[in-house]
Amino acid sequence: MIIAIASGKGGTGKTTVAAALVKVWDRPVQAVDLDVEEPNLALYLKPELTGREISMMEIPLADQDKCTACGACSEICQFKAISVLGEYILTFPEMCHGCGGCLAVCPEGALSPDTRELGEVLWGWAGEIDFLMGRLRVGEAMSPPLMRAAKKRLDSSRDVIIDAPPGVSCPAVNAVKDTDVIVLVTEPTPFGFYDLKLAREAFTPIGAPMGVVINRTGIGDKGVYDYCHATGLPILLEIPYDRQVAEAYSRGEVIVDALPEYQNMFLELSSRIRDLADRRMKEARYA
Amino acid sequence: MAKIAVACQGQTLDDQVDPRFGRAPNFLIVDLETLEFEVMDNSSIDTVAQGAGIQSAQAMANAGVEAVLSGFVGPRAYQALNAANIKMGQGLEGVTVREAVTRYKAGHVEIASQPSREGHWR
Image (cartoon, rainbow over the protein chains, first blue to last red):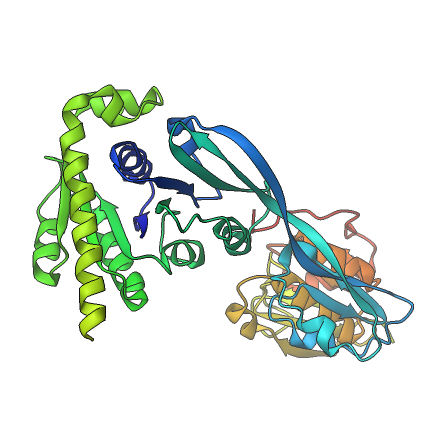
């Protein structure tokens, strides 16, 4: 079973929830940080990293002497990563999405595959927890290929809990697709509400059941609750607005370790998540 | 016959120079001797998320101009225009195209030797 902890919005508590959930999970579990632009799950789980792999992407390398400046490569490139200026061919490696189109259309064989570094995939153990993360190179903008490289190391013999990137664009969709349950972390404010709507709309086509964790309850308004009731999004857990939670978080502690009274809450959350996944599997069987 | 391109907010010599190179709505391709010009509509650049500077630079190379005048030029446009051997006159925001061309002819325009702006992307 693969569970993604996502949110439309940064700063709502994804990592708080993901870290607490893997800590109380009572089956073999792999914790995966796919927020590769700013991975921070490791700060809480403090894994011992035992492996590392550099992830590369294919980009074109131009041979000025063979190029006849026909412009075919530049025409096919939607990202302006390769340009013909007069007689001169120019590549912009950091804009390349790695589709390989330019190499395929070049009639002169003037382009050959080169690589650029996307970032690294790291793995290790935090006690019994299998840990995996991706970390994007500073200055790199293309996170989905690095996320795919990290996902190749998912352990299918375990339950997988993914800390997904915020937002609803390519990186977030990449992290939540192929999952069995999507947990949306939000807060009961107009900001949280707005982004929750976006997240639900963006992730609905993926087809995985979704549930909501409302963080910092007691602040804000009723918008998020009304929306969940109206659309049938189940509320899986409410975490009260509690100074102690914020203090534990800022010390780098997992909430269920620092505040044992939260353990039952997260145990409850894990069983609700499994219920959602089971219900889906049953539906699939009868479909 | 030397031609230069001026990034322009409008479509006449008396309109203002656009500060942006890559995302200027129009380029006026001006003949330095006669001041005759044609308008190159660049408004479709709005649909390009990234690489506007590169695309505009490519259009300049195809138009065969010796220089472009604008307010500033970003790093990728700089690299592309440089590869195409096109000079970049900068710091001309807030004046009309006519004034910019006059200054260029008099040699009073600073020619960039490096990009004058950070990219918009990082």
